[in-house]
Image (cartoon, rainbow, N blue to C red):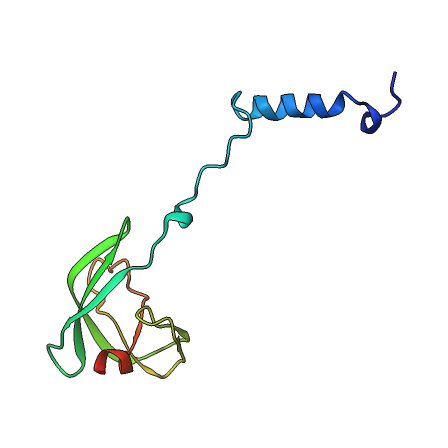
Length: 120
């Protein structure tokens, strides 16, 4: 008889059996993919500039939301962030476009686009 489990040669077989039972009897079951793995970047298009301080944006995020004609307002950024159109850094105080908040608030309400890229 073995004095400790670590030196028992049948230990590995036992651990494989326990793991196999824990996976519902399917050996080496890969973990289910998380929703994060399927997350894709939204598709964004500037459609129109209704006024000098607004932009009409088409926003499509598969599995999350779709806004075919969403009004975004130009305002100074209240926080640091990332431009969803280019991935560039935005500092607090820089001019940005952000979705107009209605009731209910849109899913993309916290997103921002650097004004320089909309006005270009």
